Length: 278
Ligand code: C2E
Ligand code: MG
Ligand code: MG
Ligand code: MG
Image 1 (cartoon, rainbow, N blue to C red):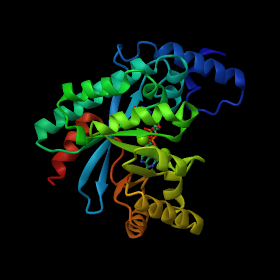
Image 2 (cartoon, helix red, strand yellow):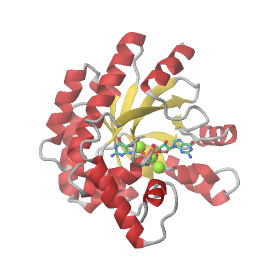
Image 3 (tube, rainbow, N blue to C red):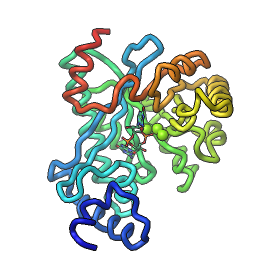
């Protein structure tokens, strides 16, 4: 386990368990206080409607520690969750995103939605709904412009408690979105039990839409289910015009993906807005 290998462990496949363990331990150690050292920042990926109008942005966290280089968020968020760091990291993410988007909205005179990915550990905090409410009030952003994205792994914890927290958040006027829809085994029962306003069709369906009849049929079925439950349908990972046309034709409401824009820094988002007067 030499220094050179350590530097590269994040990007390359690590077949041995020991290497994986060491990397996790290193991430856990370096992540502590990373937000205070200015290593954590947010990117924002636009979501547009079928006419190309900006509907909102999804906040995506970024971490670039000098010791490791860029670490993918799903990797360090998982470590944060298992090492008791998610509350500190989550608070930083929420504060930062609300502040930056509120600033951009007031200086550009535009109003659009902000989607926040909220992990199961955050939802399990005893005062999470109240805290979120206070943070939104402090930011000045409208509650109707805030969307909370959750994934199916919230079922790992106590579903009834999760449902109660989401009901409380929903009652404040915040919208709830189910991310990566269709990839877990409980998507349908969640639709019945949770106060959902939106589902995000997972990128894995969008990826194969054009050449794979099964993926297309699945996407159609998801749209039909969404219609039945009266939720907004967002397609994620849209990369080509052909995918967009297909999704538009089967009845999606909103689109997100590299075809429209990669995730942008706050500064780049300002430019994106300037270039799109609508
Ligand atoms: P997600 O919430 O499903 O976010 C969508 C991911 O797809 C993002 O990856 C985004 O950059 C990527 N993506 C969007 N459009 C395209 C496309 O057209 N092509 C391709 N190849 N990729 C696309 P990212 O930023 O690496 O985030 C990965 C996951 O990490 C997220 O999946 C989410 O589960 C988690 N994550 C990111 N930020 C946060 C956060 O602030 N809090 C929490 N709890 N989780 C986060
Ligand atoms: Mg998401
Ligand atoms: Mg997603
Ligand atoms: Mg996904």
